[in-house]
Image (cartoon, rainbow, N blue to C red; front, top):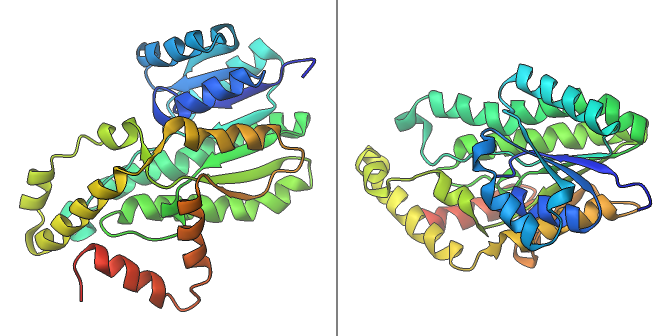
Length: 283
C-alpha cells in the first residue's frame, strides 16, 4: 500500500486482538490498538517490537461500554490520522453459568460488552468507513452460531451480533462498506484465563445443575487442549482486511467450519441439541 491505511482494533491487550494488531501492522497498516487500560499495553508493544512494527502500532484507551469513551476515541483517531479505513470489533468478555442461578446481572453485563459495545463502535465509525469505502470486521464466535450449555449470556450476545451484522451488511454495501464476521472456535488465549473462573465455587453454587456443569467443564477443558493459537485465529482477520472481495462469514479453522456447518444444515435443531446434550451428560 503506497499510503498506509488505518485500522482501529478493539480489545488488543491480549489474545486475538493483540495478534490481529501485530498482523495488520506487519501487512502495512497503521494500527490504532485500543484497550480499556493502556497500562496493559506492554505485551502488545513487545510483540510489535519483536515483529519490527512498533512504529505502526498506536495505543489508545477505549471502553466499548462507555459511549463517551467511544466517541472521544473515534474523534481523536480520525483527527490524528486523517482517515479510518477499517474497524475490527474484537473486544469481548465471557461468562459461564445459567440464568436461574446467576441472575440477570451477568446477562446485562455480557450484552453491554459483546453486543451494545459493538453496535456503538459501529455506529460512530460508519461515517468514516463510508468516506473511505472501508471494512467493518467483527470477531464473533462459533458461539454466535451454535448455542452452548452454560454460555447462555455469551451466546445470546454473539447471536445478536451475528444478526445485527448480517442485517447491516447489505445496507452498508450500498455505501461501499464491506462487512465481515469472523468466527473462531476454541482459542488458547487470555480470553479463557481472563474470566478468572473458580470452578469449585461455580459447581458448588450450581445447585441442581452441578452435575451438568461438572460434565461441561470437563469437556471444555479437554477441548481447549486442542485450541488454536491466537496468531492462527487472527490470521483470517488480516486476510479479510486485505481481500478485494471479502466474504461475509469466515471461520478461523477447519473445526470451526465443520461446527458451524452442522448448525446451518440443522433445520429443526435436533442435531445440535443431540450434540450439546452430550456435553452436559443429558440422556
